[in-house]
Image 1 (tube, one colour):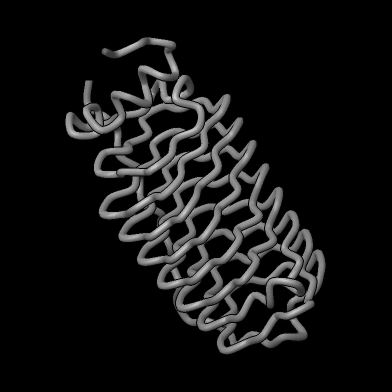
Image 2 (tube, rainbow, N blue to C red; image 1 turned 180 degrees about the horizontal axis):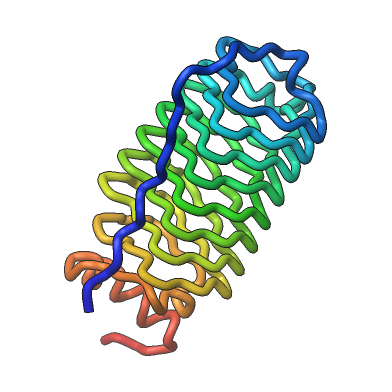
Length: 219
């Protein structure tokens, strides 16, 4: 059976209107706006909607004072060249969204819904996707130190030309999740890898881990 690949996002960013720091407030509906070179430290945009927007070279705040993006919805939006020591977007929604060339320290995005999302050339220290629902998500040319998919539901997710240091997937539900090429030094939740695809080299590398998880002694 062939592993299904993620469907790419579709964006239509035509003529955009310049956006300003004062536009980013809670529960605001922002459409067709271009936000560039902004510092969002301690700002709040909870429950806001970004539709067909661009965010470029935006600082999403310092680790101790990130912008609050709880429940925010990004649709048809591109995020490029940004920085987030802490990306605080729990229970958020990404749909037809591209995130490129962005540095994320701690991604606090648990219980989110992501559909047709592309991460490209991003550096991520820790990505907390616990309880999230992912469909058609691709991490391309990314470096991720640790990704937490505990209790997540993931379908058509792939990591081409990416590296992942630690993979957590306790009680995850996976379908067409392509892990080929990854060589994490630690995997938590091996029993939840049903529905994932690995290659022959990975099978040999993970043999000891699989045996330990199954309680099999290899002598």
